[in-house]
Length: 178
Image 1 (tube, rainbow, N blue to C red):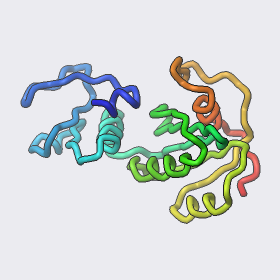
Image 2 (image 1 turned 60 degrees about the vertical axis):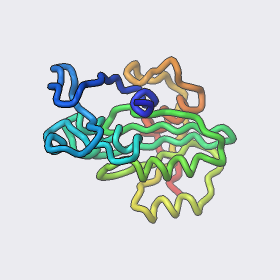
Image 3 (image 1 turned 90 degrees about the vertical axis):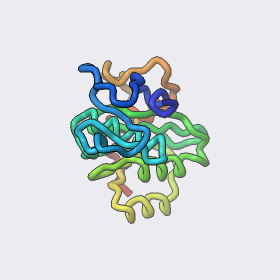
């Protein structure tokens, strides 16, 4: 439940065997059961983050995400934003030294056909870019864009660095890809 709250997904608790209400698009089951194979039902796999993401994907009518875009605003206080199939899933700020561990965790948690990491201006070690590309991740440098976020992506709780990372993730203004 904490993970669902953290990524901003509303949920209801149901008793064992209770039918899904019409407004519920996915269910997380506490343990594997015969109903786990039904559409929109996901069994808890021991990882709250992965399970919540699988449920989010199921609520969109997919078994996995098509494309996950990770926007990174590097710096002492780094912003990270994740857009999966066009939907903002998470945006947060992390101390600069922990940003690549956070990106690694995202890459390991999301089940997706493809990943794109968009990097804003700021110093990024070339070894990190090489490692990401070695994992099959498309890496793009993006010119920071000073524009307002589209209404559907605005969140009052979002910190400045996370908002910058979201703008980077949404940006199509590419810079040097090296």
